[in-house]
Length: 110
Ligand SMILES: [Zn+2]
Image (tube, rainbow, N blue to C red):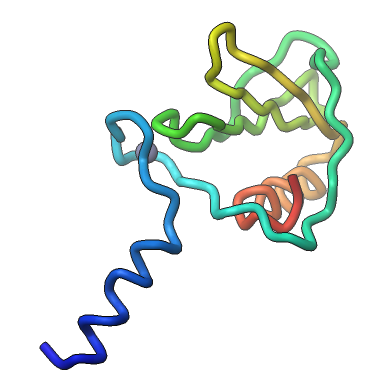
């Protein structure tokens, strides 16, 4: 191992949020929120009964679900506090929802 490797490894580790609970290792872990992120408008209720289409890993204090409410898509944010806090954003078509879901995962919208 070179000296450069020794310096890069801890740095790379710092870029990833550490798991807060045991990680099932199946779902994606969203990146850190970027400073210049788009601020989404969050509400405390979904638009109706929904099914979950995608979700991020539940090992983190905050996880996200892409949900479908009768053909309209929203994102559900869960803050795993006691009691948990729920927030919902969006009201998108599928293609718009995929765009915002990716941006939430990348931290460029929250
Ligand atoms: Zn995890």
